[in-house]
Image (cartoon, rainbow over all chains, first blue to last red; front, side):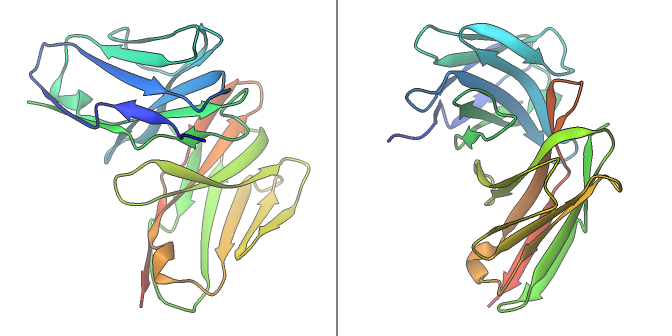
Length: 113
Length: 111
C-alpha cells in the first residue's frame, strides 16, 4: 500500500510569490490535514479536510488556503509569501480523522528568499 | 500557545538505557498520541492512549496518562541507536475539535 506522497520535496520561492503544495493520501483515506513545522514555532496545525470539506482550521492568516478533490488528493496554497513562511510543510492522511491516527508524508521543504 | 509541552527538550543516553520523556497539556483531552520524527522527515505514529486509559504498551514503548495532572510519559526501554529521533505528543483537545502537537523531545542514543 503506497504511503502519503507530497510533491515537490523541496521548493525555493521569492517573497511575494505564491506556491501550491500537493498531497496524495493513502488509498481509502478521506481525511487530509496539513501542518507547518519551524524551529521556532514547532508543529502547527493548518487545516483538515474530509470529503472535500474543510473540517478544521488552525490560526493562520488567510494567505494560507487549501482544498481537497473528490479523489481525496489535497493541495495547499500560500499567497504573497513572506520570509517567515519558510518551513517544512507536512501532510497527513487518516481514514476518518488525524485525531486518532495520522500517516505523514515526508514533507515539502519550502524556502522563501 | 501550544497545547502540549514536552520535557526534557533534549535527552542523551547510552544504548541499552531507558529513555523517559514527558508531555504536559492544558485542557481536557479525548486522547493523546505519541509520534517519532527522524531528522527533517515525516512523523511516524507510535501509540495512542485514550483519556480513560492509564497505561499502554507497544513493544519497547510504555505510555502512561494521568488526566488529573494533565500529563503523559513515554518510556522507551533498552534503547537503540536507531531510536535517535525527536518525539512529539499530540493531543485531541476536548471541545476544541483541534489537534495540537507538543514542542518535542530530541533523543540521542549513543552507540
